[in-house]
Image (cartoon, rainbow, N blue to C red; front, side):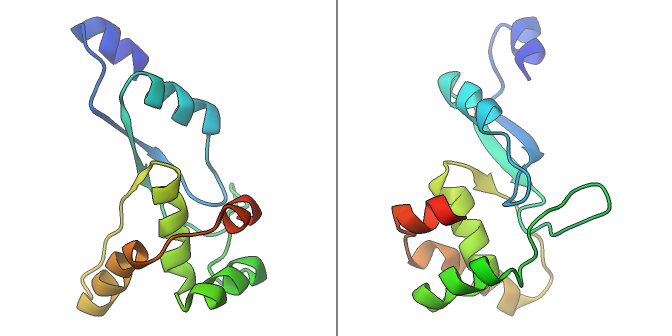
Length: 117
């Protein structure tokens, strides 16, 4: 993203990268914020894969946090990204899932829960 900014004379407004509870680059996020670039997360709800340990939405820590907010684990994972200043991307054709994703904006995570996650 930095090379694109140098080539055009201006940094991009948004850079979409992999970002989720199991994989997130805080150094990249800090650099992007310094340059006014929004980090847009793909794979916001990604769980474990062969090449990435990930965090399953059934992880007991995530379930514990979700229970404290009467929220789903997906809502907590999305809210965690938002609290970090990241714009998470989700995709669904199911209206109930879309409404559930939007409900991630109905609560705030405590500093303790952010640290736990």
